[in-house]
Length: 329
Image 1 (tube, helix red, strand yellow):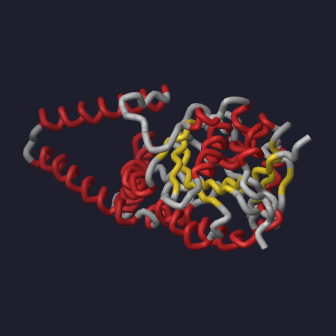
Image 2 (cartoon, rainbow, N blue to C red):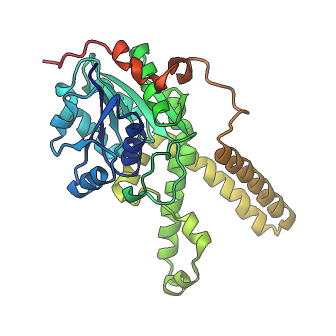
Image 3 (cartoon, one colour):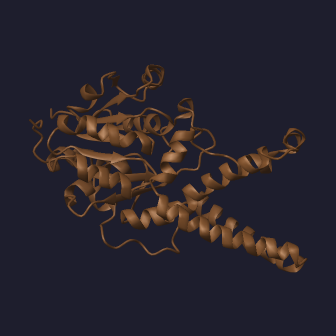
């Protein structure tokens, strides 16, 4: 019987633990190893069956891995890559889940040996709670999972990364790192800056002590910083600084138009602006809920992962396509 494929998940929060649960559907072909810097989080992942075993030592967790999923915030990725770079097997493929890609891919180019392949990843999830206790095997089901690669990345490595993504139940969506970051700045990083700014502006008001009593669901949804971690949020924004600044300029210009409508008592124009905004929001939510983005042309540069998933979601061929798997010395 051939050896099982080892997938190591570094970071066992909601995303990492859910990935482990999804991969356990292939437990006859895959061994899932988990590592988290917080022992209690690692123990929780093991207890819920998200991993076969946990390793407290990061090097022990990754040194025999065929695939590594870095389910970490941006501010932890560089140090993690630097720590593991010299300890990985030749042919190992790393996929991350951070929402800023150009910076992460630059770190990979700088730190990883040429025998190890990094494919940047970013799952597009709509979740209300990031607590790992809410992890589910179907978190990624039908969701887009962005994949980006450096020019030197081996085509086979990209295909294997796509196989891993489809094994989670997600749909690979191939993008250039800069193209990804330009769009992510608008829909990931700008909303976090907006939420932080609104909280700061209202909290600084002399009326805040009474104002806060009136704050309900609208204020909550407008000020939600999903990571719940200041450093993680700041690192995501600063890793995509230029694009976020550009989109802040776009937002400020739009806000000035709304402000002008109010000043000029242009009630009809304000109503029309709200109607257009609501319609755009309805269209997005409908597409997001159905997972149907057919109005956008498919990215032609790389083949879809389905091409490589002829049987058993590709895991039966991972070993066949695995590059030389000797540990780097």
